Length: 333
Image 1 (tube, rainbow, N blue to C red):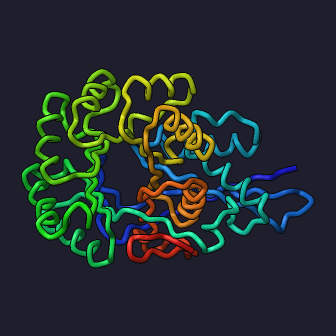
Image 2 (cartoon, rainbow, N blue to C red; image 1 turned 180 degrees about the vertical axis):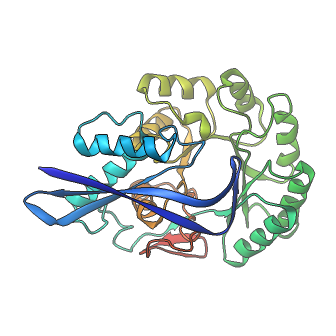
Image 3 (cartoon, rainbow, N blue to C red; image 1 turned 90 degrees about the vertical axis):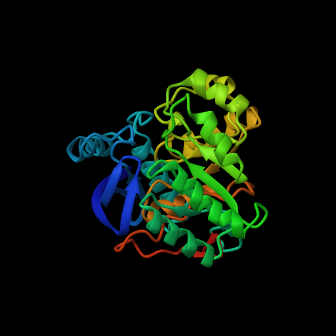
């Protein structure tokens, strides 16, 4: 018999964390522990990480904990509509199966023999703050920079990106931008054309979700490869997933296990992406080192040369001690 319990932890950000949904001052995660009655000293742990306003299974702390209580009462409950909880449970069970040593997948990453390339993330903020972050990431040896746009004047964002291009070619530094749906469908192509002059690697979610025809046209005409991110949230039916990707045919998918169906849901998206020759990479969603460790191990299950979005392990003052290290744009154990 498998037993479950959960606990909640509040993480404090080291610096201002501004997202397209406002400024985050603290971040809550819930941790699921699982163990067998006959062997209670060995426990698996998984993280349920949410982003208010984005996570489809989070409305309030009270309602979220009610879902976790329901899971503790019935481990076989259908979790398809609760992707962050599904990710936490899947992680905990895999950890338990592998001896409760935070081993989720037995691969070369967990053995310390594989380094995963990652992008350096530039948080939203004023011009000076974003410029400071860019300089820090370049000094730290990142060869792929991801900048969130849509927070300040578009011309200022172009100026920041231009500064990088003045010093580094696209062979030296790869630039990704994440619009988080900031552009209207009418202006998107014009702004993408402007960005394309700077040899941008890709742009995430240029327009808001649900505009399937508009997104399809953008992917057909764009000068910069387009990556779907928020567009994939809340889609759980396999047939509809296939229909969506077949219709839009994006250049990339961005996959976050806590938002896109847990470990099993992420694997399903990857399978569909392969079917339509769409590239992808995996990104963390503000998880602590518990969740990040699991996502890194999941990423290492695939031979994907693209830099992944796994650089959020150092954003908290009170993070759980890591077994992970980031150096020169790689994450490894």
